[in-house]
Every structure is written in structure tokens, then in C-alpha cells.
Length: 283
Ligand code: ATP
Ligand code: MG
Image (cartoon, rainbow, N blue to C red; front, top):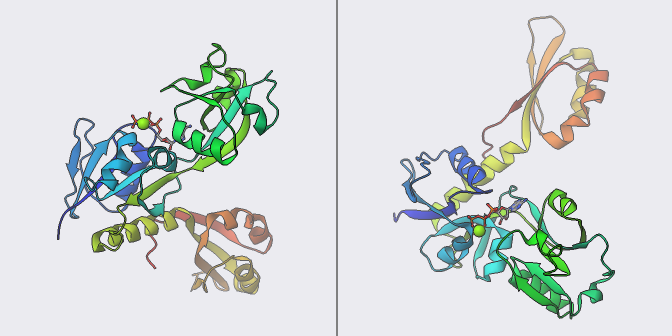
């Protein structure tokens, strides 16, 4: 079968997580910072390391079969690709922000104003959907200093914690888009068996990340109460302990459900609660 090519970011905010995800999928490859292409030794796959901006087009044009990139970059490059799997990392928001003392109060006030951004395509689309005409100033970096320099009245940029905005005397004004890393492919190629296998491996890794393996001890008298408290699981395994009248309960549960239950479990008689990471969950 033809070797697949996957494009991932060479260095930057998505690189570490992308490499970690592929390694967690059981793929063996060298991650030398100097190489642009790395073969996977145990799967018919080659990894291309690229600037993130180039990934959507490489996939659309078939130079790479699949790619791993932020939704914001896909939207900005206007490509037509298939969304294969959301990946849950690289989360961020794209917002319009204005100076703290700005006279801009509502969306319509942006009419005729200058907005600096590195994402002119996404901004233009948002403004035209809202019947607003602004002067979009394309800047490739450090967008947040432009109002202070008198270059623009507002900015449109990626905001995660808001710290950069605050330190430049800016405040968030309007949320335009939220984004996370996503696996993309060429339209029409979604059913390629190698792509499907990779998606399945990725899903099993993502599922495992949200889930924990929990073991706890409880006396038989309290067993039913404890089992009722364990959320959203198929019947747990119950194993006799050497100590007469006691059992160990083994179960797999979503972590977010678990933390809220800990005190109740303890009050119901659960002891020695051990929470362990899971590597993969294959359904
Ligand atoms: P490249 O050199 O590959 O072009 P870059 O400088 O354009 O990299 P990065 O800053 O590494 O890009 O960000 C890559 C992606 O990470 C962004 O496009 C976005 O999807 C995501 N991201 C998540 N959080 C943030 C954040 N706080 N700031 C910027 N990008 C973020
Ligand atoms: Mg980039």
C-alpha cells in the first residue's frame, strides 16, 4: 500500500503536542529538529515538518495526505479540506481587542476604524457578515503594539490568557472564533484504510486521556453504595482481598466525573483509592 504523508508543524506551539500524539499512537520515528521529513519505521507513513501556514495547502494539493494544524490557520488560508478529527490541544480564541480608553462601544463603531491583524481573511469574513467596513491593516507579528503606536484603533489576534492584551493597555471586545488543533485530509480521500487506521489510533489515545483506571478497596457491606456512586461505567470488576469481608473495585471512568465523587466515595467507605493513567482505549 502507498505510504501516507502527514504534515505537522516543524517548531512552535503545536509541534510538541503533535509529536507526542503520533508517538502515543505507537508510531516510531526520529524527531530530529534538523530533518524536514522523517520515515515511520512501523507504519507506512512519512512525517513532513513544515511551517504551520503551509500545511492546509500542502494537504489540499495532495503533497501531504493529511495534516495537523490549528483551525484558525485553515480558515485563514481558505482551503477546502476535510476535517477528520478534533485533537483537543492548541486551543485558543481569536478576538477583536480595543484600547482600555477606546470610544468604541458596539460592533457598528468599528465602521471606518483601522484594525491591525495577522488574520485578514477571518477578520474580513466576520466584518462583512456583520455589514461592517473597516480598514484592515495586515501585520505579520506583534499586532498588539499597533494601537499604542497610533497605527490602528483596534486589533484582531489570538488571545489565550489575555496577559499580552493587558500589558499593552488593551481589553477584549468581541470573540470572533475559537480554535483547536485538527487533523485534516484531502476531500474524497477520507476512506483510505491507512487514514482510517490512524484516526482510530488517535481516537483511542484521546479517549484514554480523558479516562482513568481507578482501583479502590471497600468492605463488602459498603460495596453496593460505592458501586452506585461510580459514574458512567459498565459493571466494575470486583476482586476478593486477602482480608476477609473486603474487596477491590476496578473500574474505568471519565476523570472529570471522578473528582466530584471522591468525598462521597470516601464517606461511603472507599479506602486506598488509586487513580492510574490509561494508555489506549480500543472500542
Ligand atoms: P510557524 O513558524 O509554524 O508558522 P507560527 O509562529 O505561525 O508558527 P505558533 O505561534 O507556533 O505559530 O502557533 C501555532 C498555532 O498554535 C496557532 O496557529 C494556533 O492555532 C495555536 N495556538 C494556541 N494557543 C496559542 C497562543 N496563545 N498564541 C498563538 N497561537 C496559539
Ligand atoms: Mg505560522
